[in-house]
Length: 215
Image 1 (tube, one colour):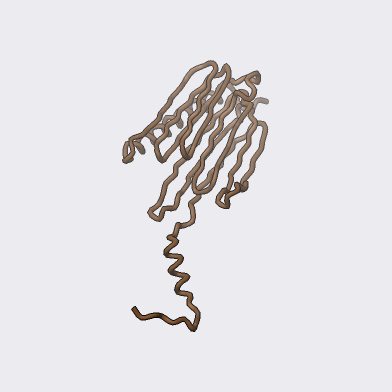
Image 2: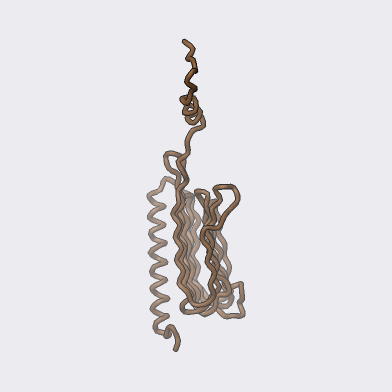
């Protein structure tokens, strides 16, 4: 028995389109209220062979499909990155060229999720925001969603902690088949302190026989 009927997928497909539009409108509103004016935006609908890639300091994506119907949106500002990808009718002959990859980094962490060898129908999205607080500490807010229930895909997901210098995996996920994947990372760097302030604290730890010299 099929997991979805054609009628079910049609409803699911259009619901995803509406959600994509809502995310795009939200990003545009955020840009309008921002002090920054640098924006890269792309919106694509069509059927055929498709490939696109975006990269920024803290986030990137790659969306590709062969002989399929696609709906793709992406918008990038200095602080935010939003991407969504809907694939319909992807064939196995596309192999690993049918893929969607979302990456983000910040606050000493990396968040990487990919769906490859997509067949049938697939929906994915990514929302990333990186901010710096008044204390200089960086914060990363990263949400990645992928859904292959109306098709098939090979999934790989990783969250790396690179604060110690050598990246260490804190989350790993591998799957093949019909899955719904949600991965959310919200992380903030430890508060940054001044070296002079630390030296001042060390100076307070004086030996008992220390003599203070008059000015």
